[in-house]
Length: 303
Ligand code: NAP
Image 1 (tube, protein in one colour):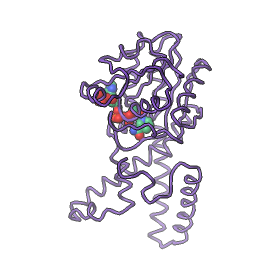
Image 2 (spheres, rainbow, N blue to C red):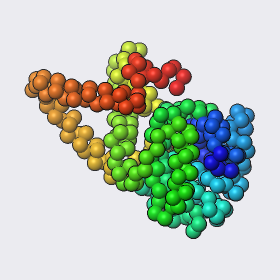
Image 3 (cartoon, rainbow, N blue to C red):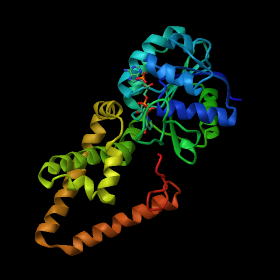
Image 4 (cartoon, rainbow, N blue to C red):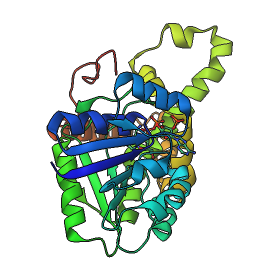
């Protein structure tokens, strides 16, 4: 057991997966949870999500050794302000937000002396959200990036690392700014591109008489899966990781224009070389164990 008492604030995909994972390995004595809506709290009680479901965030964090902020990035600051006066001295606060610098800037100033803040981001997820979408295996063999905030005690970082390792993850520490750039490339910009492609197809649907949906082929289907992700979460990601996303989008647009020109001028060599290079990246991801080459990417029908 790493922590006596853990508090999960927000009870969606990530928090519920953490709860089932904590139970799987016995990583904490007691897990308390809080979600802002009565409906989510009731669902949590019905499915046995958390040992205790509290009716306030303050009740949930009281006496907790670890507090996990698992709400959309744009909501982290307000939650931190509410709970800060009620944190136990010596407690650790962490988060699971997809953007790190903004969370550190908005949460950090609220936290009192004697509380360690170690920001975090599990690189694991699905397009589903809510208290019923979680499962214990979500973090198995996935990365979890930790961003210890200046002054955080080494023991607080070590304990949080042990928790994520217990949840099945490989843990690495990273600077916030670097994290946000890496994620802009690997996650945030690809999501924006998927949203755009599905939006374009939706516009075209009107002129193609629903054929886009009926004959939906693998490429487009994968985009729709990504573009089904939670609108609030992704709005907040782009509102808070502005600079890095705009930087990567700029580069993306330049490459897209180069490919567009190659198509227009019939430069097949350019296209072939480009696609050969990108194919190697896919092979690298599979070799690194971060995806499978099964036709459905090993995700199965239910996730
Ligand atoms: P989720 O399933 O949509 O759950 C979000 C939770 O936050 C819900 O319990 C919701 O409460 C609560 N919430 C929403 N808006 C709030 C607000 N304004 N104030 C207080 N609570 C609020 O979300 P999730 O996928 O678990 O994501 C949680 C965090 O993990 C986000 O910061 C996200 O960036 C990060 N993350 C997500 C993924 C992913 O793929 N999904 C991966 C890695 C990290 P109600 O249920 O009561 O509405």
